[in-house]
Length: 112
Image (cartoon, rainbow, N blue to C red):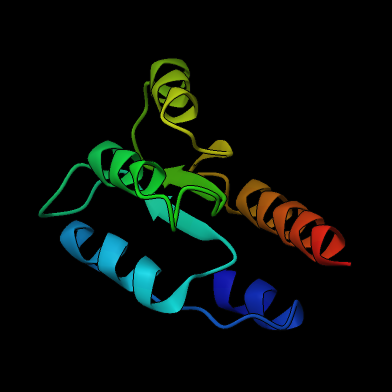
């Protein structure tokens, strides 16, 4: 689904399966948007988010958290305080798609 939405908006999707690779991939590709999972097998997504926001070259990239964790209010507050644009539970894929579309439209509008 994410691939379809990205393609519709003229974007490519780059997947990273390890948390330790997210910052280097973001620096290499300078994406318009990052959809970040909180649960990586090798890293905590909150730490990855903090690294992205601490790096001046990636700090301005909008990050949307997509998580399977169930303590939504607590996790959302932490993610937003670390600089995430928003937080979506993995159980709501349609909401994720709407939020991605909204962010991509905003990014395109900012460039106009």
